[in-house]
Image 1 (tube, rainbow over the protein chains, first blue to last red):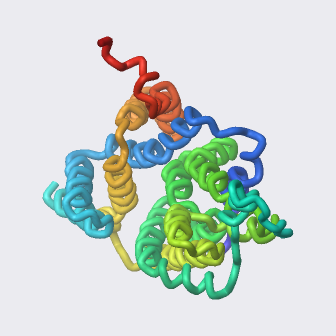
Image 2 (cartoon, one colour):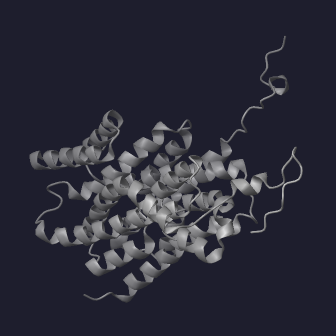
Length: 100
Length: 262
């Protein structure tokens, strides 16, 4: 099993970026003060990343994806357990795709 | 570290230093690992989902496992693989991973006061596998009086192991599944992120940054679909989050401008 040069480059770039994020706050934040406003901006990002991952497949999909997304959100709200929500969402998508 | 004898009974100069006490022991490592076993299950499941996604977009088993072992960031890896068929530019990949992991900058800054006395080598070792669950768990244990940084590393390593093993299982399992789409396997990642987002939303008072992110995604999909969608969504949310930030009201009610006139 071989790794092509592009894949190796991507993995190296990703490794560097992830390591920078994990080390930067500790190493450099004594020079850059985190103001409450900057903190508010940074805290808004994780949820936006999730929305950015969810959005395209659902917008490019159809009814199964939309209902599956709704089922996942309802399940996690009712049960508070992400594994149950995962199975619920997948199950709904699978069933609706079979019927389509 | 030198400890000066405390002479003043009114304002002991060492009080902030005492709060900073930190140890780093094998017993702490074991404690952290033991407390994190529940995380291990979700790490494995998410890892399996990532492995299936990776194989689905044509990434080899070796590359997927290597990526999980070196990057160790679910959302960043998923974001890059979702754009894989478009062969994203390395700069786009770099920015995407930075954006997906920017929360670690805040966690690292928060850990500084606690971990700094350990020195650069140990802190680097502890910070490299840092992950949301281990950060939360270690801070909880520290509040309870356990200042052992081994708890943090032990917890991180359990999640890391689950993630890499899960990825390997997912890439292996994919060859036995004839049509992953038919049983909704390609939807696992979306469901995982939707569940995380729903949990994050519950604790969040301000919905405007999330709305800005959603509008940014719709706009990107409509006019400029591509691997930058996540970066655009994150920037939109960050800007709205910063603009909408209001300093907390002063504790002194007399100074409040919102006080109704008498």
